[in-house]
Amino acid sequence: MSAQTTINDENKYLPENPWLSCAPILLAVFIYVMDGTIANVALPHMAGSFSATRDESIWILTSYLISSGIVIPSVDFFSKLFGRKNFYVISVLLFTIASFLCGTATSLGQMVFYRVLQGAGGGGIVPLSQAIMMESFPKERRGTAMAIFGMGVIIAPIVGPMLGGWITDNWSWPWIFFINVPLGCVASVLAKKLLFDPPYAHKQKDVKIDGLGFTFLILWLCTLQVFFDKGNNADWFNAPWICWLFSFSCIAGISFFISQIVRKETLVDLSVLKNKEFVVGTFIQVIMASVLYASIAILPQFLQSMMGYTAFLSGMSMMPRGLGSLTATVVCAIFADRVDKRKLVIIGLLFLGSAGIAFGFLNLQIAQLNIMIPNYVMGFGLGLAMIPIINLSMETLSNEQMTNASGLQNLFKNIGGAIGTSLVATFLTRFAQMHQYMMVGKLSELNPVYIERVQATTGALMQYTSQDVAHHMAQYSLYGTMLKQASLWAFMDSFRIFGILCYALVPLLFLFKKSKSR
Image (cartoon, rainbow, N blue to C red; front, top):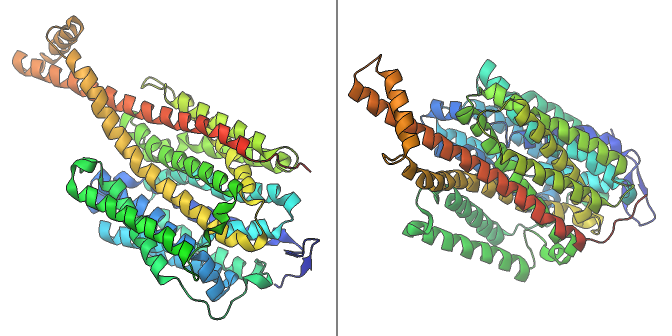
């Protein structure tokens, strides 16, 4: 159906009924963002199918994020080349086809390649959706629009592990990708029929791509991700090839930004970085994306490896995050345009940080409720902070800058999520080694508590084997308990870091001007 337009007082095109565009946008955003996390709880199953290690299986997650991150800055170019509405439909269709291919993968190499295609198809979905939502509503109603948009962006990565766990336990892991096929087809049809297409977003003539900048971008992000994914196993800068790789990545990154400044036909317009609100808001979102993806990556691992949960139970334990985010979405829809948005972001960050600290004091003698309550608080804080900060970072930009700014912002957010996912694996490894080093001295013949435990365990095992074998088994059992305790403390330390990072973001909110209430 065609959309009529009116011109508001600021000479900016607006659709008569902006709510028509919400259905295809929310559906497309939901399946794209959900696929960034739905594979988390199924990673052990996929690693087993592909005969891959846990570290290698992380590439299934990070390749998706990096691929979409490479496409995101070129969204503005492809929107001009094909027309924004047409490019949106193409992106959804490519994402849908790649999802089907992911479900048919028979090796890790195939899966990573198909995830790259999937990320490339979905790379334009979120920035275009964000730009369309922002442009379709007048400024005084953008807070409500962003609250609706947040239903896809915030809830999807939290629903993903729960849905992925249920599908993995009851069907098989390929179905976590196959379910995207019918949803993607519906989203592409609705987008073609319902999306508003303003005159300045139509197909343009004589559009040229910044091939040099695009090449630098690919080299920068690919080498950066390899550095973060493989750095821990290679002992970081103690490995010469890691030093060379990091140097090359830095050179490629600097070359990319220089090329975008000095050249006329560029991939992205960096002039939006002159806007203080945009830069500060983007930085806050990058840190929040790192915390979000890192916490979603390690919490299922904690529940399955330390608590013995199944994939479905670990996903169910994370369901309160979705409920918390849904509650925050309703709160934002009601108050976002009526109160100072900075206050909502500050309250959200405080809730988010408090949840991280609460996770940092868990132990292995807890009930499922002890996981669910902090998850609800974390989801509520995430939704309450993320939705208004998107609006705060963009409200001083013009409509013509929205698509470019959204692409640049989501590029940095994807990089933050990918780096956070990679770094948290390093945190777990290094913190576990640190705590193991601190505790191993307690397993000594000079420690009376250790001697007592060994003797008690030996006595219990002697009914099944000889005394010497039982004694060695008792020592091995206590050593295994120590390793488990070291891993537990590593998880707790990581969660505490998440909480501290969220608290540290609060002072940055005072760099924004007080937002006007309606």
